[in-house]
Amino acid sequence: MNQNHLFNFLQPFSPLINLFIIFTLFCLERKILAVDSHYTACNVSTTCGSQEIKFPFYIPDQQESFCGYPGFELFCRNNKTLILTLPNNDDYTRQNYTIQEIFNQNQSLRVSNSVVLDAEESCCIPPIENISIPYDRFKLASNQRKLFLLSRCNLTDAKEFSQHKVNCSGKKMDNSVLALFGDDPVLGNASEKCREAVVAPVDVGEEGGVEHMLRRGFVMEWMANNCSFCEASGGICGFDKSTYHFECFCPDGPHASHCVPKDMVGARKNINAESDHSSEYFPQWIYRRLELDEELGFWSSMNENDEERARKMIIVGLWCIQTHPSNRPPMYRVVEMLKGNLDALEIPPKSFLSSPPRPPADANIDFDSSSSLIL
Image 1: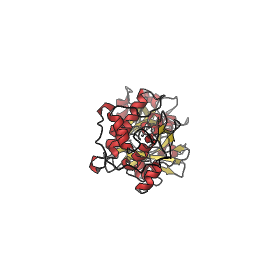
Image 2: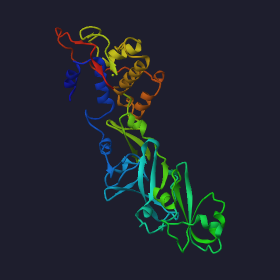
Image 3: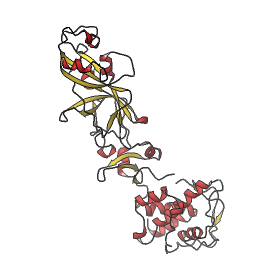
Image 4: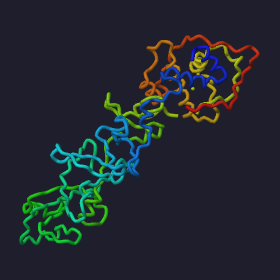
């Protein structure tokens, strides 16, 4: 769009709408109607079975890696079972955990050891390994306990441990297995009589035996940026590997934490194109009113907070259309100014831009009070 076409396009609109268009063209430095590629890539619903996959999780063969957080890769087995892989205690091997449910509202999920779920019912305690929870990403939720499974035990004349014997589906076992919680006072003595031990986190929120607890699994909370603020602003959460930081992908590009809050701004009274210094180019028109603290044409129904927000966006817009490129703020600075205090914003230098062609003298254009703009 060349300059003459742009001026012709702007003439039928109110000054505040002109500001919004100029803000979009010059500040975002993107083509009109262009949508950020990261936003487009991550704004696609991804499911495995009945579970929707949202940040910080992602499925590598279905989503771009920047749609999730490092270390939160998931795998969809047979298009219905969601798998999280966690390291074993030796830090060299890994074990699959089946995700039973994801609770996005409080950043937690319930998982069960896949070996336990896949084992035949006749197998009482499957060959599971000690888990090593990566505490830079996850932590056990409250009310989760450590269950010690002791096997290959010599329990001759050891009646004190009889209540801890695992009785799988009512069957007695010759090679006894003991199950004790970590705070059980007899755990030390029991460990001396058994050759092998495995620690399994369990959720003790419901009644049930050892088999039930192992199948029910345990709840972990994840530690990654909360996505609710970004989503509430219309963005999609993601991750920038170049800076190794969380990003909020918005239609107009990535932002630090959320999309630009939403140049309601509108005109309060009729504005005649042939009066009130109409020969001024709009940035000069609005600049003079800011400088003199004059009326900016806001709706009378706007409260003090709305007017302050609108003034802030107008000042930022004037910074973004500075004629000298070095005076135009980068996008991260634009976000900082929009989020900051109005009193801290400095009115930018005047932009000595040429005025657009004036309409013919007989074209008395009015902009009525119905003109409005959603920012």
